[in-house]
Image (cartoon, rainbow, N blue to C red):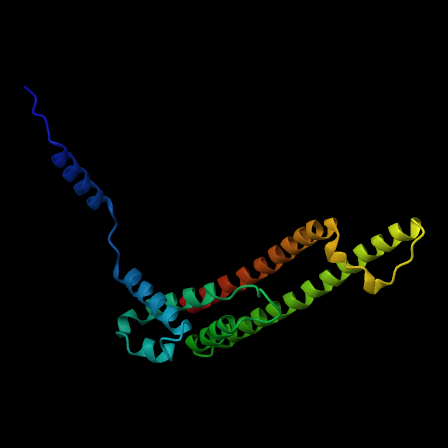
Length: 195
């Protein structure tokens, strides 16, 4: 007669198989994760200096820890949501330069990133002004055809139904272009620092 296993025995066997399948975290991965945590603490204002923290780590772990720090810092280099580069983004760029030992290549790439972020805001504002002008002209023409004349100040292009649809398309394209340029620079930084 076949032996019937209890539910508990089946669960225990399955748990044993699953734990055997879980890959072990190697020392470099653990050190990289430690670096990511340290950079997060730094960006949240709970640590003062990443270089000091890095230098306090065992020398054999410092490369992996620095790579983790840079990963976290690069995640915080993002397109500005308002008209200025965020403090966290600027702090991340400055700290990446420090972690690279002020290497000229990384410094140049971080400068490019800062310029791209500034250009993004300027470009976004230019595109918004162009869209405002185009919608305003359409509204004026429509009113003029109805025999009405209106001053520009009286027209609010943002209230036009077509405005939001057009702005969504244009800003999505703009975000995609700039995000791609930023991601290319981020990859270049990662390669130079980890290489």
